[in-house]
Length: 130
Image 1 (cartoon, rainbow, N blue to C red):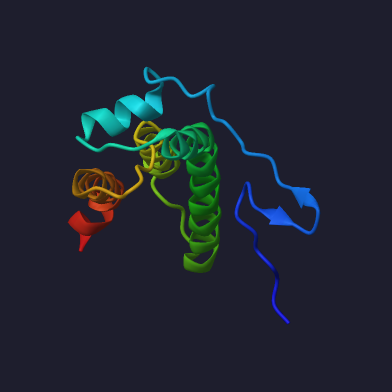
Image 2: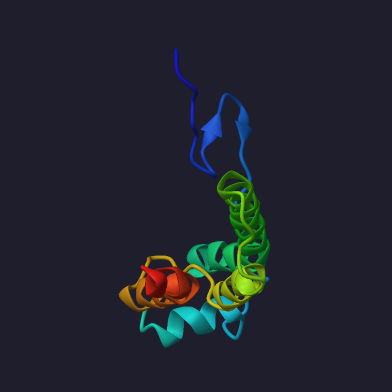
């Protein structure tokens, strides 16, 4: 059979799961400011998730940047010719720009536009050669 999922605060047998309070999330936190600047509203439960994403986002971006660099290194070996020296610096700039704009929940059109602009800036030298 499948896994039993029980909501927080409900009883399982004789044990009761504790309610979790997220009182540490401040209304002045980066996550709540992001929500407010986007005109969105969320409760404390939503803010803690945004805080988690905001905390991990720079690490996620750095990891993605390292994977892009690995793929570029493999591409360079397959082509048998070096990539322009600025390529890896461009990837670093891309991941830096991306890390300054944490993923909002729910996703917004402005965030997706920012992401697409950053991706285009990364790919611009390749597109210009075509």
